[in-house]
Length: 410
Image 1 (cartoon, one colour):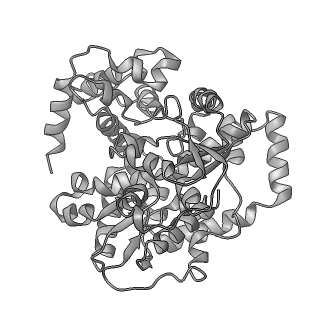
Image 2 (cartoon, rainbow, N blue to C red):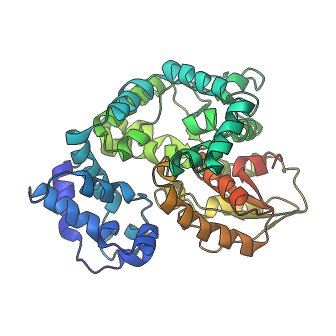
């Protein structure tokens, strides 16, 4: 594990200030502010490191605007990892300005699976028809902040129960040490459980047993908020829990799979064996595609959105397309700018609702051009954002996780 101070100095020095990052940045394309670009983030961190700037609300807002989508890094001649520069900036700000809510969320709720489960149960009890109607009315009357309006519109109901509540009927957990260990993301478990159930059915169809271990959040939400120590604590928890298992660790959340694979950067050599066993769902299924029964989907036109954490962070672009193209009776159409960020980025769509919606509009215009009736993706965060988009712009498109197409339940 490279010393972080050495890494950040190298990345700051590698930037030649050419500005190529600007054309690729979804945020800069909207704001046209230098502070929104990768070059701007580099300059801000350089000033913080040199004590030429205070970690105040102004610089905090610039770092907070970044999607950490890595589009700039792809276009950078020296491949500067701007997302890590931004995380370092956020970390320095968090050390001075940590909010009580963040401390409670990242140090007490997300690391404790049972505590998070109880919290989600309470939230589910609040999702009643009268409450949803009241939120909708308040939104139309402009009496709710835009971010809360987005949250109310994006978050689905319980879809017939959380994913962990369905494990019994799916015959999970079972098997021995060489089984598939399913890493159940918070998003799949609580927000898109139908997609999670489809993933588990597909994994079982591949012929292996699937087991689910109780574990905390992967730590990515804490990490992107700059709460690196909290993320490191959750990483070590997961490494310890999955040490009792020797087979592949599979997750259908692109954000989780990317971060789990990057644990060695966070905690060093103790994470190497763990990270080497992690597979994204699309990666794992593509490797074993001949063993998967044909999906019962026909007469549908499908397009695909690349999650940033799958395409840019893991380089997994061909696998999901291969899986979709091989489904008999399905016409696959490529989505223009398929890897352009959808603007979801975890809670970004809630914290920066205005920017997020402008990014999403571009994505929806491209979806419309395909004429597809199914829009597939591979991350629950993207799925929620895209679902909001097709409703907002009234597109006759069903948004699904790729596992739902493979399971024949789109």
